[in-house]
Length: 287
Ligand SMILES: CC[C@H](C(=O)O)C(=O)SCCNC(=O)CCNC(=O)[C@H](O)C(C)(C)COP(=O)(O)OP(=O)(O)OC[C@H]1O[C@@H](n2cnc3c(N)ncnc32)[C@H](O)[C@@H]1OP(=O)(O)O
Image (tube, rainbow, N blue to C red; front, side):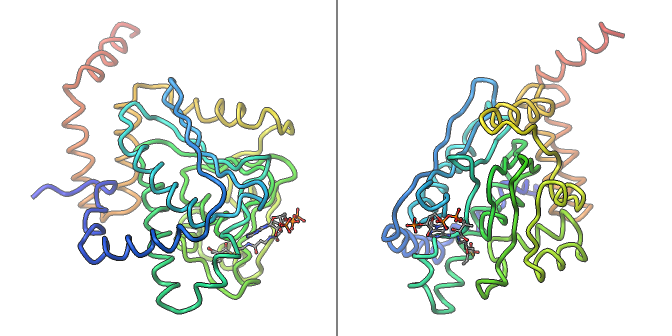
């Protein structure tokens, strides 16, 4: 039996029970509307996903959750995709879940249903076969901070802040940001970030290994700078970038045996592909 690639492993999620739950979630999320999640796909294979709810510092409403699902569907189908920038509108990132929607979801069942959905979204984001980068301008708080852990890389502009402030609102991370933070900065550092609800400026975040770079201090050019930063990792055909990301996703999530099997399969498929043969021929010519 073939081992499934990690990005294909969401299949059991669509069981009848889960579809039923999803329908319930949809109906409920539609009641908390506002803002949008916008996607623009560039011809160079880099897309920009924008959380757009500036009146509430890009807080995530129910309908934005549903739109994020739709945008992920679109991205999963994008064969020419190589990179993704996740950002917020109006020079801020995201102030977390819309607090207005939380006040009416107070039972444990509500909470469980909510994080089942949010974890599924962040897992799909992390498993996209493109290289993703979160561009943090302004504040990334609570669920906003968790969202950035579901990207491959993180960039900040000067004056920005990341804070896992869950303790202050009486909860723990639930979007997968706790487990992913440990993978990014390690257990000790994560415990400090969460239990201290530490406000991480760009220098602190870089020193802690939470982000990968600090962009120059020009807010208006931040997206352009992030694009330029990401292009250094996407300057190859989509088949190759997507293959690389799938190999990394397998290594991140599976046992070594399963990951090696996936690596072999991807290698085998690419070995004789036109893109690979052409790149190899050029490398031989250059020698
Ligand atoms: C289940 C919890 C959840 C999760 O894990 O899923 C979380 O994400 S917990 C984290 C929730 N977020 C917060 O606690 C942040 C709350 N907001 C703030 O601390 C501030 O608003 C801040 C620092 C983001 C911005 O402060 P600033 O002084 O610059 O602006 P305002 O406070 O005046 O905010 C402008 C406007 O936005 C509304 N706003 C901001 N954040 C949220 C939010 N998360 N949900 C709903 N609305 C939000 C704020 O109320 C203001 O609205 P206005 O109508 O103008 O009063």
